[in-house]
View 1 (cartoon, rainbow, N blue to C red):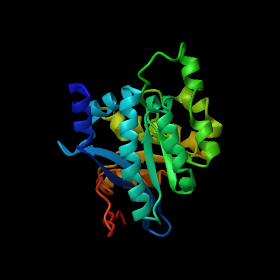
View 2 (tube, rainbow, N blue to C red; view 1 turned 90 degrees about the horizontal axis):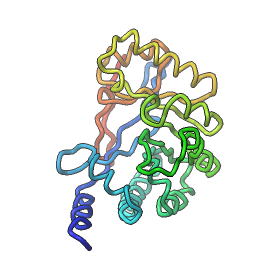
View 3 (cartoon, rainbow, N blue to C red; view 1 turned 120 degrees about the vertical axis):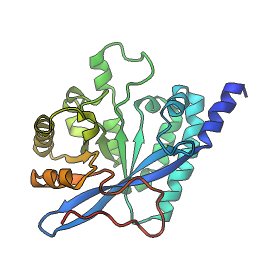
View 4 (cartoon, rainbow, N blue to C red; view 1 turned 90 degrees about the vertical axis):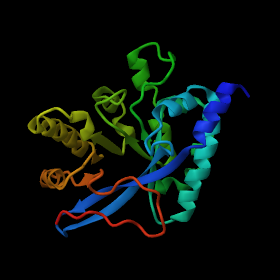
Length: 253
């Protein structure tokens, strides 16, 4: 093992998993309930997503195999510890190139009714796709859908997860997610026009539509008043290590 290999493995040893709930607000009953939990990676070095280390791990198949072995062990613990919970896991498009990733997906297919797979917005780290059109058409969504997993397109409107990507895969999508973080710096009326457009598309094609990045009560209430009742963000609950006793959610009513 080279010195670089050792550094990569050492970084992986710093990883741990946290979960953040996706909330559905039942306005007629004035209650909030957890739909499922998004599983997120954090580093003990700073308690944030280890972007650089993660990208290095998935750049090459051998490193990705090591990562997948670690992730499968940690994720199976969650599935076994919390049998009544549903989870969403993120998979980078680059990872779908590797056999180990698909072996992992196959190995949890018996839990497909409890697992959603989020396709992240990252552009694959290779030149496999000769044209943009070819890139948009070669997606794993249809395979995942046939296997029974809930298919989720994360951070729509950023990276690869564009309107064109969604339009080319309408029949294989169950949920769209959009993050308010991408709209920072824009006027709120402009932001709401974008949200309205994506929400209308979701209703037309019977997708679930989740707004991420909710960090205050006013935003949460404004979105509910517009019919956007599936939300995720620090206001509701920060990402945390799941324990036997679930943390209480914030309330808006």
